[in-house]
Figure 1 (tube, rainbow, N blue to C red):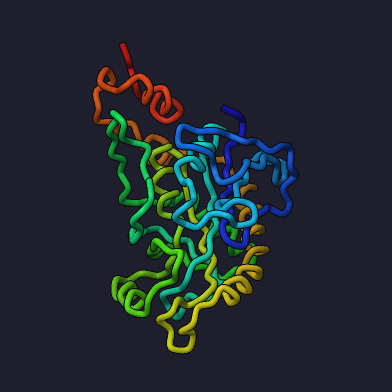
Figure 2: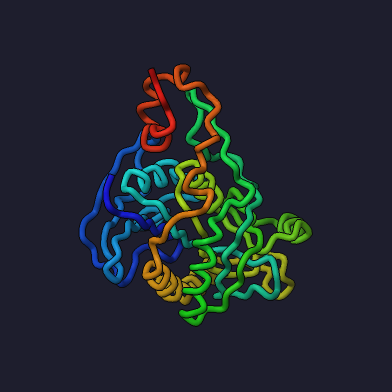
Length: 289
């Protein structure tokens, strides 16, 4: 474990962190394989943080290929208790315009091919996930975003789709009838795993387009998304830097003790290998004879 307390996960368009005074890179191995990239450990305004490129440097991994379990487990090994995650999203509402910033508080899962839990292999746990985002951190990030001059939308629902293809028109229209606000391909798995790791997690959603439902924006292209991402990237870095100044704080949220009543398996029934591999997550709750 280390003295790094804040983790930053950068998505499409945010592959590095300006203002980060780099101290070292750490290449970690986890029971779930290798994370997307080495963790860049450094300081932002004197606060120690760990930055990880979600898709790897050069954007090598599709949303389905990202090793979410390893990425979050690596943050836990570093000692991180709060993850600030940035990603590109499409808008499901006219009022959520490209280059706006959204801090969603809910998710709808439309993924199909992804590992999204640390449990199994002889240990069962069920964490509460009614409120998947750490509200304390999210509101703090919203304040930092407004201070950076961003147009901010607090709350709302993020549809997490499989990808890498964008939505069909029928799907896009359907999600709007569900009351969805934004759509993306990455953040739900991170939120689930962060909760199991007792890490506070919040999403900085950078609106790049209107998906394909909007009659005047019915063709989502990579060029359109990249152009808006570049405009958003600098704002995102300002938001993160502004939030880091306000962290860490005393954690009174449910994230900090999410596993306290979640483990169902009797400690003596858990295989030794599983208990050893998951010790950074569950070790403090296992009283083994």
